[in-house]
Amino acid sequence: MEKLEQPVEQPSLEECEETCGGTEADLKAIRSQMLDESSISEMAEWFRALGDPTRVKLIGALLQQELCVHDLSVLLDMGQSAVSHQLRYLRNVRMVKRRKVGKTVYYSLDDAHISEIFHVTYEHLKHK
View 1 (tube, rainbow, N blue to C red):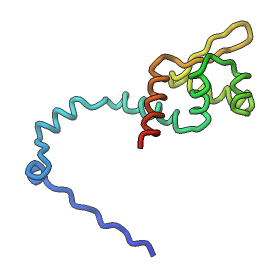
View 2: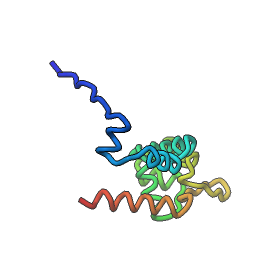
View 3: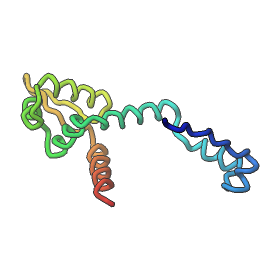
View 4: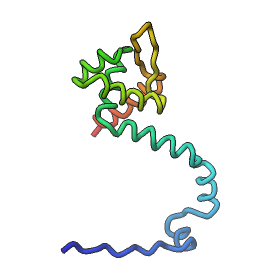
């Protein structure tokens, strides 16, 4: 039978100031620098987009060059409909953009930040 953890009692503000060093003024200053709720929601949605292996693969392929849905479906060994669905999601969170030439739609990364974040994340994962 699993043992339930007992809730830990949090120290009062006075106890915290003595042990942690965080004064009420410090906390107020930190709170003023925190993201607003809208930005927090957008950022969480952005990270959710990278929480799917297929979308990470798509970003990885588009790091190399602009590609059409057909090429992406071949690279990922997936149906064009499934690839299009994932690209639509990535477009909605502004990770990829599209360019139409005739009937062909080409996808590329929305801007250099996407590449930068992808590379920094990968470097962090390799760094042990």
